[in-house]
Image (tube, rainbow, N blue to C red; front, side, top):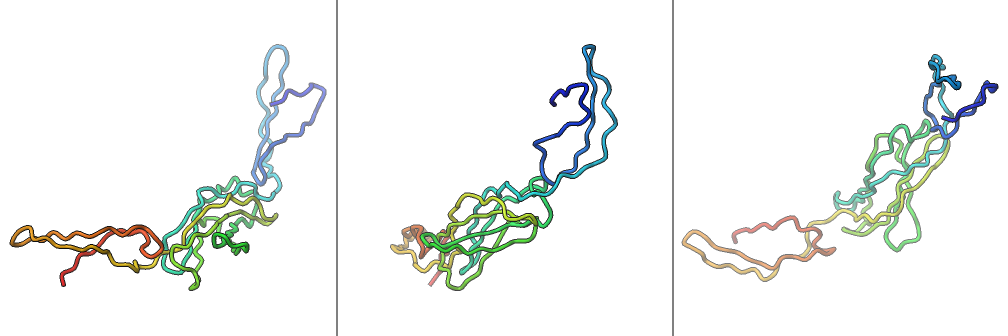
Length: 194
């Protein structure tokens, strides 16, 4: 802390966080040393302000067909800067000029799901998540790319062949499906007997 002249009886404390309770003590010092601190002052809460810290780790994806799932890491309470805290979620199809905006009023929220039948599977979206409170809208995150939900694969594996290994075993092989909008992320295959 800054040392204040002995004839001064007040000081302005700066760089405090908005909407946080503080208590203060004063310590007298001279050439011999530093005395005992005063008793703490009464708790004082600073005024609210627009939040300035945006959510981090913006991602998402997954979900069902016709869904865009957006996730983020929530902002901690000491950085919310006031009452009425929530999140602003903005998204648009990659290459589009128009943003869709939604408010998520829950402080604990870390997810938003947009459902619309016109969303095609595995479509890329530009996504930003910001913050607001009763004082106004604050900072937005940088843009992240999030893909809409998948549909079941629309293409079958090709090059299926079977080789008899023994009287009770057959080895079945096929060409793997490459990742694309028609296959999505192939998590596995199912081999059935015809």
